[in-house]
Picture (cartoon, rainbow, N blue to C red):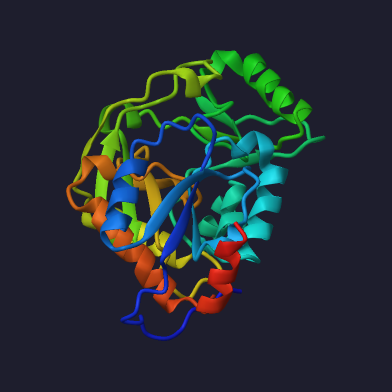
Length: 314
């Protein structure tokens, strides 16, 4: 269990940050973040997470656009373990591990939060679908990878989709398709150190029976002002993250309208979400500040001598 105590130091404990990304990741926020950190005299470098680098040499490794991990999850998990034993990892490793598999939605449901009803289909189990229009997705996924929406008369295709995931060694999940999203959109609330920074709205993503949704153009994101009920649900979701006694440097809570219009949790994104920094004035500076605040409060410390020694060996 990660526990963080103490007050933030007036001395910035971070001088060098590695920002983990993936080969070919189109991370439009990256230059903004590097510049914002540089304005605070922090050297930030974008590095592919699977690169052969000396992670000890950095005061912090920030997981940002590692968008290829779903089809390399074992390698990614091993990398998380390695880096977390080398330096300060953000978000913390236990949070990343918990958030890797979408079965974390069960924990949120047990906490009494409004989560989209979900049926999990493990490998070896007979696929059982929900009634009506549904969504099928893998339990480890990003950017709608291997995710599709099926009409009620396309159950055979949905079952074949589940079997395809199982053949790839991945468990599946089935959820009802909430049609209100086509009218009201998906709402993304972005928090830095558990404080709301900004929120965006985007339109529906899924196209009927189209599995490769990650290859389709992304819907445009627009500024959004969340309601009180949305803010309350998002804050409760962050409090429900197990084992953490300190605000998370970054988090995104994705909400969709339920059948009655009330907000429901679709995802709690704590690993590598798009934070839409480019859409919100001041967001990148708030994020940079949250990172230094988190580092100041973290018990993961390394002496200046140790850091210098590691840097010399890079």
